Amino acid sequence: MAIVLDAALLATGCVHVLLAPYTKVEESFNLHATHDVLTFGIAPSALANYDHFIFPSPVPRTFVGSVVLAYASKPVIWAATHAGLVQSGVDVQVLLRLVLATANALGLCAIQRVVSRRFGRLTALFFVLLTISQFQLPFWMGRTLPNMFALPLVNMAIASMLERPPGSTQPSKRSVERMFALLTFAGVVFRAEVALLLAPLCIQYLLLRYVSFSRLVKIGLKSAFVSLALTVAVDTYFHASPTPIWPEFAGIYFNVVQGKSAEWGVEPAHAYFTRYLPKALMSSVVLWMVGAIADSRVRTFMLPTLAFLLLISGLGHKEWRFVVYVIPIFNVAAAKGLRWFVSKRKGTIYGRLLFAAAFGVILLQLGVTSWRTGTSIANYPGGEAMRVFHEHYANTSEPVSLHICNLAAQTGASLFTQERGNWRYSKEEGLSVKKLAGSGKFTHLIAEAGGHIPGAWRTTETIFGYGGNSFSMPAMGKMRGIASIKRIEQLVILERRT
Image (cartoon, rainbow, N blue to C red):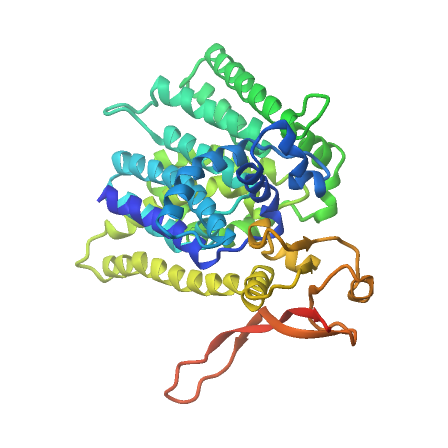
């Protein structure tokens, strides 16, 4: 059964990639860095072509994940190309994301197998069912956010945290070392907030005497040195900096010390508990408490998890992806809760109701996730605009110079969607349609819908995107049409009149 459960985790992540192949602006740094490594190589002379020099970010970001993803994807791209499966740059983008989704799925598979050995096969089954029926984690596990590069390492660390040798109540020395090393690497290289999970675990393991203080310091120093040496060497090179660069430290200084993260919004301390976790966890936000009440082992690994949430809640700027690392832990606890539901005697009404409820919540989650996936698919008009543009002008022999507006750039118009090497693509910012139309630099525009179109231009295509949900009362005997996704005009493709 373990192989079937592994396949379900892998398939779920991959299906979400295939259903929504385009990306948003927050994924662009790592996506474009991977594109540049594949396209231009890593020689010093190639770095000038890299996108992060053309569109620099306020703080440097690590190239470690992008370089690893690029080289891990090369054999896959080669095989797919020779099999005739790669027809466009978007196909390469999808393959990259499938490789990343696979890495995250393998981390979840490791957790699933540990749960099966320690808590039983049925608990492992419920862990997988809860995970694949949720929306947030499966949808994002193939997206090139820094958090998703950290997540495979954190998932492997969680598996080590849960692992116990046969007949023992304490983790093995090797599991302890692996857990702390993986979390240290993830925190130093990819996402500094992982340290807020690492700290409570250090305290707990010291109090429970799973590790000595001297041993913990030794593991931490060794792991931190290797991690720091790698990220400084790689990122100083790729950012062409005359001084050493540690991106995560720069990010902490910029966002926390200088308080710049507040520019993206500040939310109250309870936001993770009242907004983000309920949305991400769905039924697990309640079921984990059943598991914690039913099993003391669950309480043990939930304590540092809750401590992490309390610590990170102290930061004003909040996003769900900052706490993505604890979703699998909550799902393990919730799976144990569902296991308790189905353990009751089926001969009683109470037992039958609990049994039905256990599988009912999974079905309900699947329904909600299907809806949310549908709305998300419609939320990438920029990627759709690029696809339509290249189809519409596939046979043109005239030189093409296309300007891509900010909305399109933020909603899917990545470098991988720029299919034609002999065409000119521009994402120059701060230009209105009027200025663009009068400049004479462009033959075509992808612009936001609803604006004034100068007379020298004509609309050749209109791109629709997500515009909210529509609910209506069905006619008697007709259940279709109760709810639907509204699509509104988002972008237009403009062509200069000749």
